[in-house]
Image: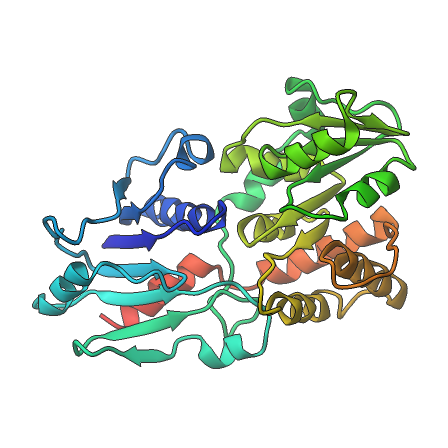
Length: 349
């Protein structure tokens, strides 16, 4: 089938990150994809090789020619395709399936809302498709070969090839975050034990450089600023570390597939909607953890997100990692997002 995926970049890389992974995975499964995006600049480093079955196009000009819609139209996060394109969708002898791919959440409303129709004024129906963590949601993005690829990964060889091999006794931590006033305090905590901190390019590296100065060291902590990584290489970074600080949606999902200890910084929203979203995931994720681990991880996540005042400490990494591995095994038992999406579309065409 021919897919049209629409994406508007709000103010970070999460939107394009999710859309590119979804588009590339659909293409790898034999679908043809056109990605319509208002700012494709991040793809230069996120997906430098592109994909032969994914065409990247600028957002259609409402005053210009309108492309012919394909079989499926996916608007990411309610971004609203251009009105002329929607009009042409409605005028087609067989209108495309129209999907609104929503944000990921563990909140209860997702199961209630997933798959609901939204009748449109032009007579078409738009369908809500919610990613999630249960069989009654749209699932999570996961390429068919992900587990096999990770099983063959050589952590130390990858780090050495990048000139970032850990010294004896060092734990390896990655950091990808939004602006966070608690970063200096986190660096103090990390500096209490031998730590190699690999810092993602952009906001994260700017904050760490400002806090640590030119030496990029503090106590037992030494930081390395990592250049922009492709999505495949960012997966490798997560797999290579003992602890990952991630943010938003795309890196949050990839940290769960990495099965390493992780801390999630959720995208902060002015109306505070991020707080119940964070707590909903915490409840689901930590339900099977020991009381000590659940309390430690929960407190740390709240603190890192500015939702708790306690001076959180890092829980022991080994039991935390075992819990993350068990969580991933449970997720692997669920059907992935694109498989569900393909089935969902097939039922509506």
